[in-house]
Image (cartoon, rainbow, N blue to C red; front, side, top):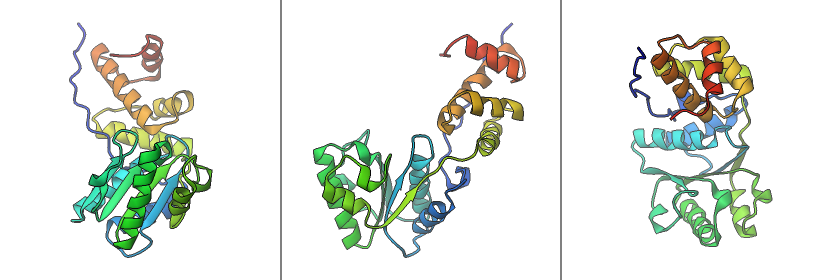
Amino acid sequence: MKQLPLDLQLPEPFGFDDFLIGPNLEAFLALKALADGVPGEGCVYLWGAHGTGKSHLLRATVLRALAGGLYARYWDAAETPLDELAHGYELLAVDHVDGLDDAGQVALFGLINAQREAGRVIVTAGSRPPAQLALREDLTTRLGWGLVFEIGEPADEDKATLLRHRARARGCEVDEAVCRWLVTHQSRDLGDLTRLLDRLDRAALAAGRPLTLPLVRETLRSGPGE
């Protein structure tokens, strides 16, 4: 008889403690300081390839700022158009600015000016350096006003270690060899890998078997899960 898996997944962690620093120590420390209210450059732009952790860092910055009593918000511009409701935050993080339409670019230009004039913080993220973004020239200039950090990809070994740590946090015991195989043969995005590991854990529970490499291969050959 198959064991029915319970849906006991934990929400995706987005704290600083859950971020794999790798080559991004300078950006990590700068954002952590801003979240703690330490005076410094209040305009920060992160750029890098998909899956390197830009969104994670933005969310971690906002969560830490909120925990410290700051009025802060994470705003995903790819899902919610920027408008006047984005004004007034002590710390505002705006993600996916590279996809802004004309109205969104005007809104972000005004936000950056307003945040700087008020001595508040704005952290933004996109896929390319400011000068290479397909945005208005005055906006790309504003994005490059402050600190600009390229968020680089961690080493595969570090990804495998973090993936195992996240699995254990979810109550899933997984062999290190499985995590290494997933990192080298599947998506290189930690978010995608974590969701895949959730699926594999459910398959192991349903089959009443440990989460081993043979089971992983069988599950992946069977196609996408529900």
